Amino acid sequence: MTEKEAILERHAVRNYLDKQIDRETVLLIEDKIRELNERSGLHFQFISDAGNTYDRFMNKTMGLRTAPSVIACVGKEEEGLEQKIGYYGEKLVLYLQTLGLNTCWAGLFNKKAIAAEIKEDERLVITIATGYGRDQGRQHRSRTIEQVTEGKAERPDWFIEGVRMALLAPTAINQQKFVIRLNDDDTVDFIDRKGPFSQVDLGIVKCHFDIGAGRNQK
Ligand SMILES: Cc1cc2nc3c(=O)[nH]c(=O)nc-3n(C[C@H](O)[C@H](O)[C@H](O)COP(=O)(O)O)c2cc1C
Image (spheres, rainbow, N blue to C red):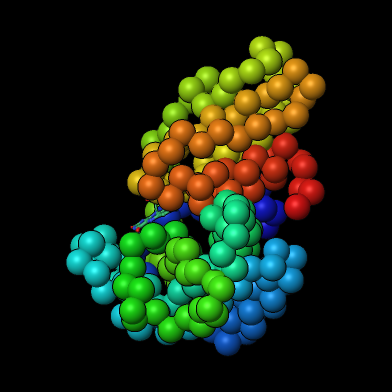
């Protein structure tokens, strides 16, 4: 399965089977995390037993309490940390999808309960719940290409395909508070229309755009 196919298949899944991720798959996840941490300088951690990470009232109502495992998205406090977490975290989400796992980004969780290693100069920005879903989720309602783009009127195919993939990106409360601007010189700007976790969203959106536009430069 390619990253693009993973984008098309991925939806947020909040209800999981009572089944641990098998050992072989865990090794693959750990390898991928090592690679992404080396590339990005981030400190993603796979925590096989989610424990009480999702014991908040809203987690229970939404179902996330059933997730067997969790990825702690940790990184050194610096400018752009949240976008970077979004970009590389989504690379991981798409990889997990290719392994037959399901995921849900989760900004709401119990910070005291998660067994993550957070060094003094680091911050735990967000989590990703993962495991084998009870279902595959469903397509979110989406804004249109016109609503999320601006700039040059004449749009090359790579740009349209990038935006199409960006509209399939998960965003906090499905807010899609981003704008993608095509400049006259064909460079692209990503604009944050601000909302909860919208900087993480923007990183996720860039990841999807790059895959759609075929510019996997990061
Ligand atoms: C940054 C971020 C934070 C999120 N936080 C939560 C959360 O705390 N609880 C939850 O149930 N879903 C959370 N989600 C999942 C979104 O609600 C979901 O991705 C969105 O509704 C779009 O649906 P989709 O992922 O199926 O495309 C979060 C998603 C993102 C990107």
